Image 1 (cartoon, rainbow, N blue to C red):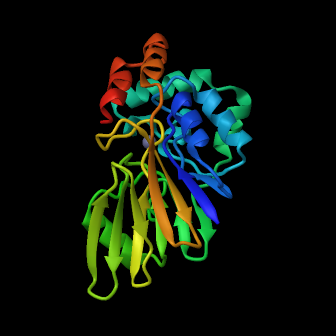
Image 2: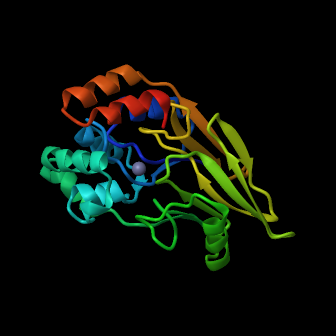
Length: 244
Ligand code: ZN
């Protein structure tokens, strides 16, 4: 099976449209949360997720936008966008976000959460220390995560107990080896922060045992204009051009 992994769309309709167009021969799509927040098209993005019937879990911005996460935990711009989103969402879409779970079982020993297995909504896995705790305390072959907006992979070699990190900001492929375990972030669709402004998503091929990261162009200037015209903080538009 070919499984697509998308995450952190952040109300960016141009990015999600181009990512979905880029996919081919996909059996199933999984969305790892943060459909909304930051961008100007929250309802459109939620409706798209409903339409493609993908399996979706919640991110911190999704819960923030429906009042289920304390917005004091967000920085100023994120908070402004969450309050803006709160007023824009229609009832059906609020309902959709409030019914999202926190964890997906993709297949035997392969799971997905927005943040980390021990704190599915909030925790970032940004360094080898945290990755090492996750490898030690949870049983899995692959954990797909989102949240940091950085495409990359932590792998643990069980022969020598070494953890490696590979950044995947310019496409890339992870071969799933028998002796290794993996924490994989396929990057962000709608607000990449790994220095590459192109939208990011992954394909997990369960037969070929590999995960391929794809980067996709989209009309960034159009997205930026909408963010500015909506009265959202300007920096949320500007960061899209640099992918930070
Ligand atoms: Zn996010």
